[in-house]
Image (spheres, rainbow, N blue to C red):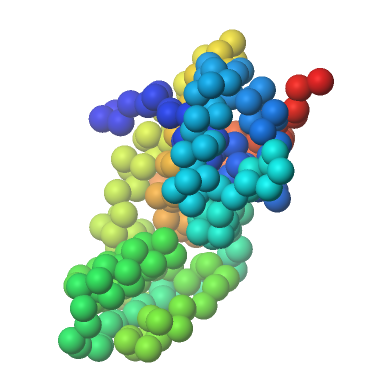
Length: 241
């Protein structure tokens, strides 16, 4: 695979990953320091990262506890939605949004594109977005204001269409590589944390297709289960005695 399995994780990324995995997303400084030491970060490095994150607005500090900012809580919610998506039975229909408004700024177009991608909708061609209608959620008001939205049914093979919209084989292959590598990190908390963080990032690209459209041996559910097992065993971080 072209993607490395174990990319180095900074102290900031490790703190964010820990808080993203914690509900509510608040941890005491001593708990963060203790957990980060297990991952190979010194107390000095952790406290420096926490200070910078408060300054830049990533974290809020109250007494000796740190909480994700409102912006990052929204990101945590998006991550949670991917890990435990609300689905509905798929009956063969597809959602489709056709952007009809003109004269929109580049910033507005980019913001809408990012939002649709977060919703796991793919661009069939410029201004035409679609996906299988198997997710239990509606279209955002800002999309409805500039688009016509439909539910439709392709005349061709829906599995072929899905494979054209998303690189399913590459996503699945990298996901399986992550799962195969996981047992080899049991003796290294830092490597295990780094690998699980890679799983979290990778799951953000899961198109959340109905099972009928997933290639064989699709690793999505196995990745979610591995992350849930890790989170249950490691988080929340416990303060030192």
